[in-house]
Image 1 (tube, one colour):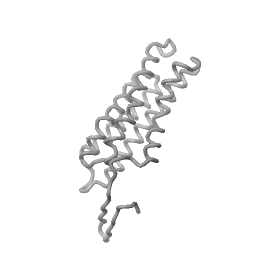
Image 2 (cartoon, helix red, strand yellow):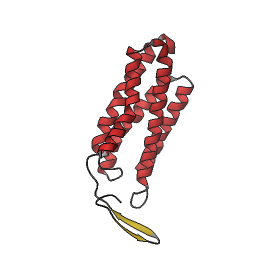
Image 3 (cartoon, one colour):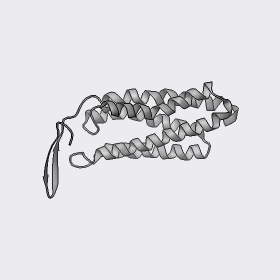
Image 4 (cartoon, helix red, strand yellow):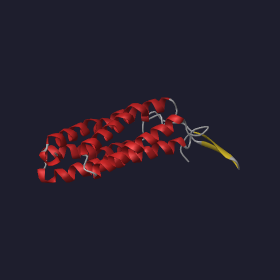
Length: 174
């Protein structure tokens, strides 16, 4: 059991009291930023790497980003299970929003609509940067999301327009 956590159990329910840190645990921050690195690396590689690899790089980067969005939708849903009184409407709406954007980005990538997929992912990551700090302050997400998400999401928020510009100007994606 986590430090600072107390738990009482009855047959019909459980009461959990926990102390929540305002900063992410170090391993959590490491994994949070590591998940964003393939998006940044893909965007950079398009400009410095071999053009012959650009189709693969764009598609793998977009599929990775879409997978991360759908994963983070699941994170939001998982957090809502511990919400007193059950999940809030904003938690469910955010989860569906992120999942929908991630799923549509996968479909658009597979159908070779890479600019559309890029835009969908950009909106998703921008949404996370804006909505997770609000959710954290409202007690609907871990408190450390308020400080972590804007910095973490800066990577895809910068990288996806770079990738999108490459796709837009490249004759390979016309």
